[in-house]
Image 1 (cartoon, rainbow, N blue to C red):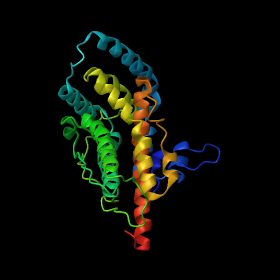
Image 2: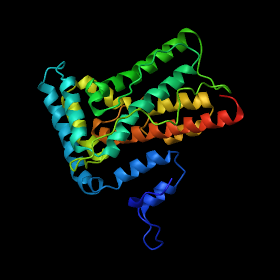
Image 3: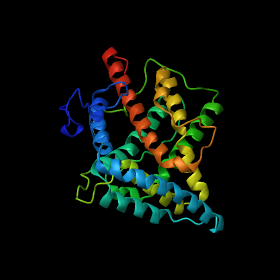
Image 4: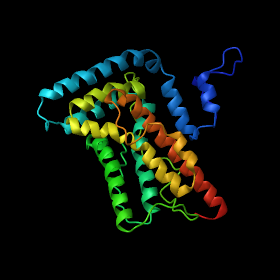
Length: 292
């Protein structure tokens, strides 16, 4: 792939950090994903807006937590929340960021399908495959969190009931893992679509907290720590412990503060991309040896 011009040129006296990260292959990512990510990360929004938005967003998380003390525990407006999120993404967030967000639902679903298909037990999956930003209005962010926890519960219940455990195999089913582009429609690219993914997530986190119950928000933030859990499942099936090194959302048994939920959500997205990329490379290796 031709190197994107926005990443800077090769200059020994002024080396571009974005070009270095694009060329580096120590972290497995497809060139298309890395290009979109670095284009978004090198934006003016990321450089100048995020440093102001992040402390304000974290202060709002504290404020909303105080408000939740007096608000009825069961009060929530998830439909309104998802309308706000989808509308905000459509009109203010960059096309690169929106592409990465929609893609995340697809790859997350396929990773769970891979584990289920090779677990040796029957596990129901509920794939989320949004094509447009409007598809997010169907409570997709909440459904994404619920899917993760329900998958872990259902998988381990089935394994316990049948006295089984996840094991590596030379003949894994990679049919759901594909290099083909996901079905995502053309995204808005107006003058107002300039906010990068990290700034957008920081802005949306206190909104997410406000329109959900306290329990739902805590579950959403704790779901980020399932990155290690899902990575361990995949590493066990593939007999590849290095996969777990790509994930660093902390130990799943130790709940963390919600204050850093925004930045941890960005890490969650990148960890998912790297895990999916590793599955792709394992599929290619299996195909070359005739084991897939």
